[in-house]
Length: 424
Ligand code: NAD
Image 1 (cartoon, helix red, strand yellow):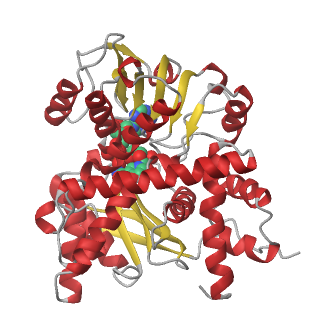
Image 2: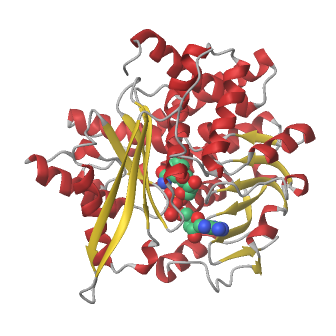
């Protein structure tokens, strides 16, 4: 039996969670021992120190990471997170999920993730630009349009991707838009990329409600997180006719049983940056939001918010995982045993983001740009295909939907490694 001899480099609760998910899936498909550890562990990582001159003349050093989990199936792909609680282990876990996700939806990519330990809200615009550019400068030799292609994640956005693209392009001496995705449209970003993850989540929720024969006009929805993904999911679901009864961000949660006016919330956040003191609903706590009675619960913030403490108390019919890794292994077991909640697992649910990132990369490489309708039509077609394959796998092996999605994703990565040999 082969056994990995590895250090505790990535050890953390969230990395162990991703590893337990992998082990369960690998057992379910009887993945040979010779393939297990090299499919499971990240291929390589880079940790960098990022000194930034502050507005007051002082210098602060931030720490950043990039973990490339798998490069066997194409350039690795995954977002960059700016958040105060980033750890190398978290970035490694997120990179594993990116591998299973790109593989599940059939993209010619591996998986990666990046992060910087910083609360971006505490930086001025200039400091944020310096940090973003410095991160890319340190990563120049580790990334590339055919090596590893970053995108936005928590705490990063189009503007940051634009700065990073510019830094890389200045280094190589020519414009290289395909180095990152999620850029502003003026710099080669794709139509529809900003809303792609949320649109994809909303589309899958709509399709799964249809399978359950629940009219979307009668569905109530609670969403945790009102950033890029949460707010775009809310907007798309409201457009489909669902009633969004609760929204939240890190500054507070708001509940309105008759439905929150999402356009009003979006306007509020555009001017105030956060939901604090929003008057479109009753203030509740983020913990209460997760336990509200609703048709669809959508965690769209950080990992590990559905735990063994609240899994038994959930009162939703469907759990749509817009965030990566929102459900712990213990909570997953409780939800499986309850059997009354349809789970759309993260690797399927939020895959709209990386799908349209792929479209952006294709457009950059070919210098031929698509209109929004083409992007959305192709996005929904790929989501339909992924949904069909997950549900067929679920039915064939009597798996949970998460296990079905993970086994499909992991199998393809393992097959590529098997065919290529030991090096990639
Ligand atoms: P974002 O930074 O735009 O928004 C994050 C939101 O979560 C903010 O509203 C923030 O206030 C909120 N939040 C943070 N901590 C919270 C807490 N403790 N309680 C409640 N709300 C909290 O980030 P995003 O891009 O929307 O990413 C959200 C999730 O979606 C992450 O798990 C990310 O990995 C995942 N995701 C993002 C994309 C993408 O395209 N951006 C794609 C796939 C998956």
